[in-house]
Length: 211
Image (tube, rainbow, N blue to C red; front, side, top):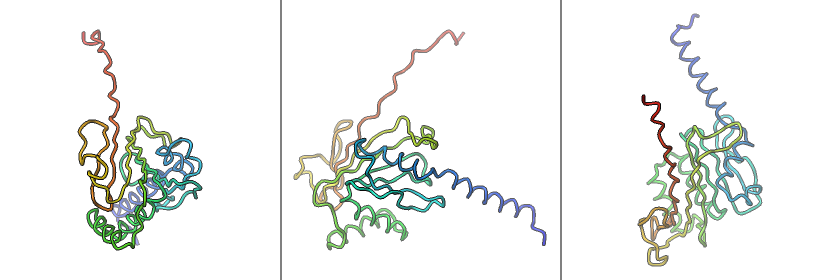
């Protein structure tokens, strides 16, 4: 039976696209290196690290021995975004992954985790728990080395049920880089700290090229 040319072309394109997505996923070693860019340098050798296998499935890449869990960049998302967080946040973060896999949207996940946290079914941190987030542009990432140029940090400190009154923090930032409390009074209350990005210095123009 002959296969129509257009159908064969579509099959070939889909096959090549699938292969291309697989080749875009770095090796476990590179993923671990990139994920650990979010962690303090003296903790990077002992973190637990999650990433993606060759088929793009979320998986454990390395067991850890300290109190940090790191997550590699999602190959299905534009840009580079990695994070590391306190092991005390693992039940909360992992539950979010499970709910995402079940097809729940962001607000549905929040409502589900809130009910579970309030009922005691979802274990929440009993002390302030840190998350480090490091992100950057795709064009600044080298998948051969795992290095990211011009990356930017963001810091999140989870304090379940903290309020503006209990912390003295505002519920919105009043200056660049200042800490503030997001979702106060809820199970996901957290301090946000986003340092200002460095503004590149403007190079003097060479007006000789204008003539």
